[in-house]
Image 1 (cartoon, one colour):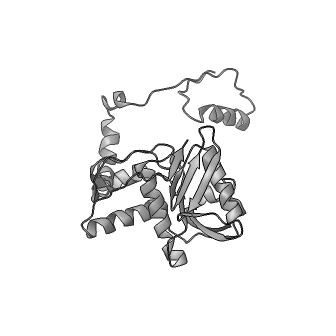
Image 2 (cartoon, one colour):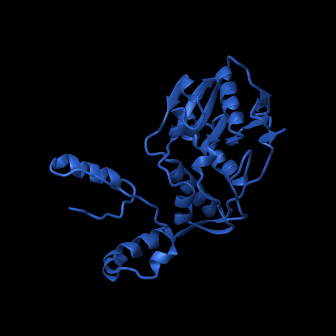
Image 3 (cartoon, rainbow, N blue to C red):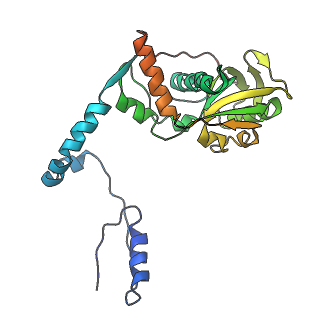
Length: 253
């Protein structure tokens, strides 16, 4: 007996599982390919499925299309420094106030965690979900200056990440040339605080220095997306747009 499947994602694993469940059958051949998912699929929508999903879509659209803020400028994401990564890192650093009673010495977000740019004009809930789609949560770490310098080396090796409160000079081949925190040189034995996300706190995305933290505090429910959403709403309440600027936080030489 031959069964034809369009295998998407784990389809091959499904066939193997079916074979394992019934030893009378075995997989003798499997073919796979890629199907481009684009607007072509919208040309002939399934009417029954569309009708079923319509009330849910309407409810979701009413939430996602809600305007929560205004952006004063287009903000891109790029290394070594960019407008949007600066803004998100600033939000993280300020959000540490809920843990420390003051902003952290440094804010850090990985460029890969910011998935798209922000356009000037209305900013909707959906826009913020597109920019920050992951369930990353705030973590405030306490590290020695020696570990902080190691973290800066990690950042230099990546060609730059989103930072706040620090000034780094890096080489084009990924070496740390100089570093300052709050305008001052790093003191190896001094303790510093870093506001970042749990994903990086675990040492992911090349930030291998962070698991060496002396202390780690991750308040429940404080997702980066939620913190950014709250910041956007606060700016709106104060009659201010979302804005950012390039400050030479990371300079490549």
